[in-house]
Structure formats: structure tokens, C-alpha cells
Amino acid sequence: MDPNVEKILKLPNKQKIGILAAVLLIEAAVLVWFLYMPKHKLLIELKAQHQKLQEEVVKNTNTANNLSKVEKQYTELNMQLDKALTELPNSKEIPSLLTSITATGKNAGLEFLVFRPKPEVVKDFFAEVPVDITVSGSYYSVANFFAAVASLPRIVNIANVDFTEVKNVNNRMMTKVNCLATTYRFLGKEEINNDKNKPKK
Image (cartoon, rainbow, N blue to C red; front, side, top):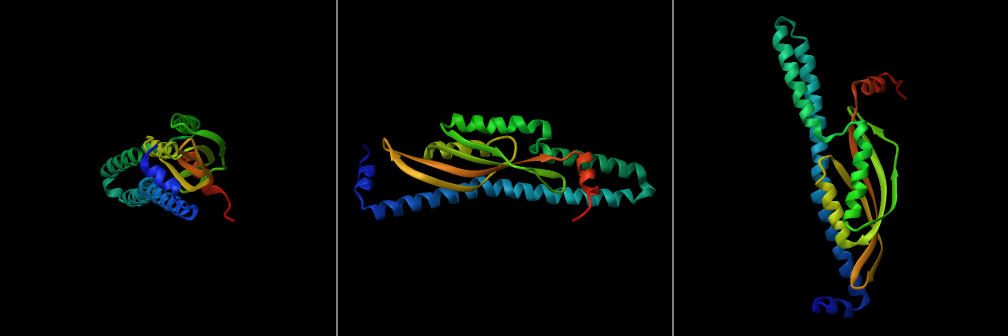
């Protein structure tokens, strides 16, 4: 056994709990900083860009004296928007994306106890697709899972991370983790129009 691990195991329980709490806080901070924040920032930038593009389209449409130029700019702006939205899957890709998330977790060595998709939350031009997840495994497996999710080609945010049932099994720190994985899908024009036509509460 590693001498450092033996030293930790010989410490009083209060010190062990203190060390464990410090490790959990550091891991939580790392997960938030390196996984959640970049994806959240990207989503905000996409929303801001979408709003800017919509304003440009309205402005250019009113410039009827130079219609050909307006049409060209409109086409370019739509191409830029399509490019920016490559990280948002359409509704047909959502099942395969959720399957890839579970496969990623299993490949990391985790056991899925709960994988429960929740109702979508419709926003301006996209919908949030939240999924309640509970997994069990080692700290390393959890960290590998979160890192792999962050590397997926689509946006998937992990939030509300809660470590429970922490225990030492054969010199491995095992835990159960509850979290909320949220991915996003692009709304088609018909869905956006239907949402706009709904009566406001």
C-alpha cells in the first residue's frame, strides 16, 4: 500500500473527514470551472449571436433600395448561424446522444442506477433536454466520465453534482453520484412559430 495512503488511514476520523471534504470541494470546483462554465459561456454566446443576427436580418430587410445586397447578407448570416448551431442536435439526434452519454459512463467504469429524461424546457430558439442521472463507481471513474462528457461533440452540461455513500472498498474510494445532465436541441422553424403563437400566461 502507498505510504501516503497508510498515513491518511491512520489519521483520526475528523482529519479523514476534513481531507475528504477538501478533496470533494476541489473536485467540485474543478468540475464547475472546466466542464460547466465553458459550456454555459458558449450557450450564452450562441444566444447573443442569434439575437444579433435576428436584428441584422430585420434591419437589412427594411433596406429595400438595395435588395440584392440584402439578400446576399441574409444568406451569409444564416450560414453563420447554422455553423454556430452545429453543437445543438436536432430532435432526431437526441436519442443517439443520450445513448452515447450512457455508453460513455459505462466505458468509464460506472454503473448507471438512474437515467431519467425530464420534460424539455423550450427557450427562444432551442430546447433544454435535462436528464436525472445517478451512477456509482470510483472517484476516478466519475472524473473520467465527466471529462468524456465534456469532450462530446455536442453541448452537455453537468450540474447539481452530489456525492453520496462515500466509502473505501479495497483501497478505492467508491461513491454514488447524483447529477443533472442537460443537453440542448435546435428548434425547427415550425416549433418556433408554434411557440410564438401560444397564448401568453
